[in-house]
Image (cartoon, rainbow, N blue to C red; front, side):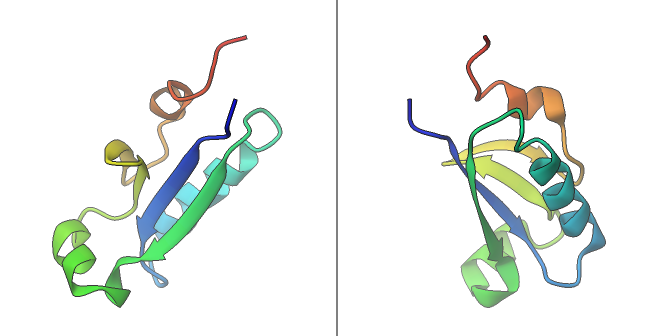
Length: 81
């Protein structure tokens, strides 16, 4: 099975973004995934879409959580075993 490819939309100066990435990285021993971090300030379209709601963790177009890491919501993308 291919590892889920997650996307974290955030900002360089955002402590909540740093916190969400740290929480996600803490799950690496239990979950197999890739994560791409995108700075929304680098793209006017993304900045307009995510402006006040970062961080946002997504799987494709599906938003998993915003503001704070929600382990239960993110766990839904991983097979139960």
